Image 1 (cartoon, rainbow, N blue to C red):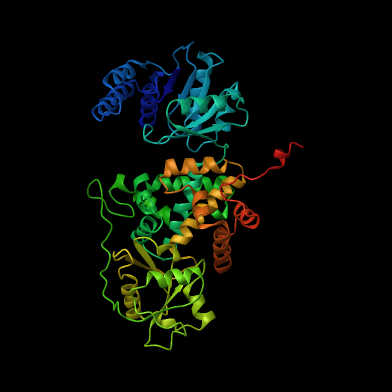
Image 2 (image 1 turned 90 degrees about the vertical axis):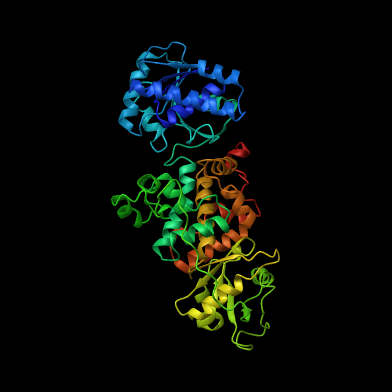
Amino acid sequence: MRIRIVGAGVMGRGIAQWAVTAGHTVELCDARRESVGQALDFVADMLRRAVDRQRITPANAAAAVERLVPLDSPTAPGDTVELVIEAVREDLVTKAELFGELERVLPPETVFATNTSSLSVTRIAATLTDPARLAGLHFFNPVPLMKIVEIVPGALTRPDIPPALTALVRGSGHAAVTVADTPGFLVNHAGRGLVTEALALLEESVSDPAGIDRIARDVLGLRMGPFELMDLTGLDVSATVNDSIWQGFRHSDRLRPSFLTANRVDAGLHGRKTGRGFYSYTDESTALPAEPPITGDADRPVWVAGAGPDADALRRALAGARLAPLDGPNDWADPVVLVPTWGTTAAAAVATDRLPARRTFGVDPLSLTGPRRVLAVTPAADPAAVRDARAVLARADESGQPPHVSVVRDTAGSVAQRLVASIVSVAASIAERSIAGPEDIDRAVTAALGYPLGPLAWGEKIGAPRVLALQQALHRTTGDPRHRPTRWVTERAQLGLALTEPGTAPADAAL
């Protein structure tokens, strides 16, 4: 296929490398002619590096470079061009003017694709004489490594174009998912589940950025914590995406952004690119602040409150500790009291079960099987008891490895539960709106965001009834509509369907 790529910046040159490596001929152009030469040199250098790493043969790399065709102008005639991929700056007027000019010089059968990440594909197409020829083709940076592409039909896109683009993408080594033309499309929309909830936890002083990031990585298995991620992306970029998606969905409570970001953006605290964001950067990387040492009494007796699977799991995790009898927390040597909480608070357990407020703490059940446990502390806690409870939780587990212990402020669901509940809820809302199918949601999010599981598969691993119970408890405890249960999770918990199951739609009955 002969493809014209307009825009020789970071995205354009990445798309060009992907296309020529897959065997396509690429016409590369830019309003700045010098950018084209720089892009050609960049692609050639990337291919040389691929040869050095034995990812491509020297002959194939040389052939790929030969398929790169520099153009003097984006609007040069091109009767044999089958596809145009636009990768210019994210501005509706700029994109509309470009496509209008291309429409006048390229044949009607040439398909137009925009790499926009935030603008409406339908709005861009509406500026054309023939809006049916344009669709979204959203790549992620760096294109050769991020092997996922969103195919976004506009409201008037010809029905043959999305499957043709899907075949092109898959035939060129990337996965393709078809997504409705909605704010943030799929991946950027799904990503709000993590970052907006992390910012809400910071707003509420549940923990600091480093504490939340440690829990996100060690308990949930994320490659990067949400604040590390925002520093890498740029808080100015993240804040703009947060606001635009929230506004695009008419101020949806579930997507509500934080008041914290505006001042940080105005102050230039954008992250790595400015040298300071949620963390400070003196070189290419930064280390999270050191955790405080364990100073409490690991031999202090401990009593686990409650019954059921979570309490049993906590007792197993404390097999090496001095466990008090099951009769009650006041019957043996002043033990610290640990309460496994699911969508609720340790404070509520103190009030409901008449537990000693100064030495009762919450423990997140999600943190019992990994390298980090999470201890929730109420305002009534005795500081010495907090230190002892942390030391007890830090005792070596069955593997012989002493876990890390994070101490956070008592809040409904603690940190990990709230993050994963939000991730699942936002993905579920995408599915119930038919923005994308559940399989595509999980495939795209896993590939683009690096989660250990797709969000719906993640929820299914926990179990739909248990996720629903978490959503209900968070909503009931906080009263915040951001936590309201989703229809997708509620129905599947009630019907015994998997969260990853599309289910039957009325159209399936062919009425």
